[in-house]
Image: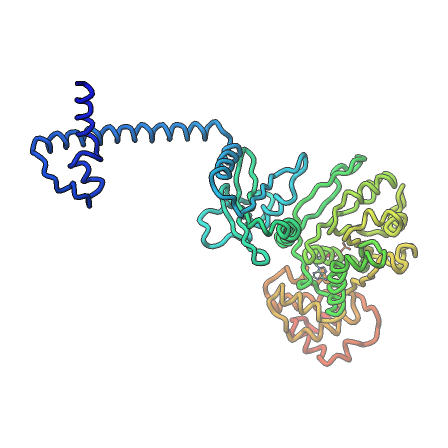
Length: 487
Ligand SMILES: Nc1ncnc2c1ncn2[C@@H]1O[C@H](COP(=O)(O)OP(=O)(O)OP(=O)(O)O)[C@@H](O)[C@H]1O
């Protein structure tokens, strides 16, 4: 009896056998045309709504359970383990992937990972206009803001027609994922990653802010440096000096930085030495700053007075990184202490030079080349001797005038040039006058006065031979002839 009742109920609820319900699943079935009584229709609709509400509530509960499980999984299982589980499941149920993913952590054991650091610098250069999130920051000790990738950012790159996909992810610590087609594994490991490191170095050099380093603890034996950004604006362009001399220095520097392999081949330490000599205010420090700004090399000021002994000197030199300019100022004024300047320069050439010279430039300055020991200036020790002298032509002064006074021509320039041939005036004195006023005529007049106040170097009537008459010149400068006679 009971079994028959159940059978009847099942028959009514079963969509595959119930004529009304069946039509919902297969509209083409001919059974759809079987007529149904009114009472049958009534029962079926209420049953449909009951089944539907049961299915709906079951679905809602299932969805809630799935959401709960997912939230729990996200809270409890670390990202890395989760992605491992997901990839293991994928491996089990999906066909094997043709992609390979490299995980690049921030650290390689106790040291930082060079590939991670390189990617961190290189990838922002690959940010395309399609990116809608980028990260910016500005360290307080730097003047430029920096752009980096935010967490989760993806960047595409291509190398020898290989498509590479980078992703910055995190699992308490940030790491990069680099995905590409497995068949290019060797190219990526052997060529692409070294390329990323090389490119990051280039980006770093371009963005680099030049610093000047001085020793931190003047009397302490340990080597520690203090640095500040080099704000000296000098450039080769702004430097007033003989154009041929300027060109020769720039070419020499360029050649030096490109000759790593040559130095290795000929068995010479990769270093270059410059001796800058000339009176105070002729631009020796400005030239050092121009060199540093041009090459983006940091400056290390080697204060001689606080060097205790040879061993101390060696540790100081070893602490200076490559691509630096080591400066010894006013070498003629250094008293011979435990380490004399000449013994330092001997060290530069000796066996130790191989450990301390790695793309380093030495600059030694002096106001008195004539008093230097022969050992300091012998050929090959300081490769280039640069004469930083007084202004003798208008070339430099015209350049200064165009920078400081916005003019590179004036009726008195010829007269000034004639005066310069017989007087000693430094670029510092000329720029000093140019800073005093915005009035061009007044300033040029003051330079004439300053020149005239100086003693003649030689008495050869140079001024009288110049093609500008003295009267004309003094008039232009607003200087009375009677005043001149008084001189
Ligand atoms: N050749 C130059 N071109 C442009 N400006 C110069 C030049 N020489 C000197 N000056 C100006 O004079 C200032 C002082 O010059 P600088 O300190 O470079 O001379 P110096 O030869 O190093 O002097 P010192 O021997 O006293 O250290 C510079 O800041 C710059 O404004």
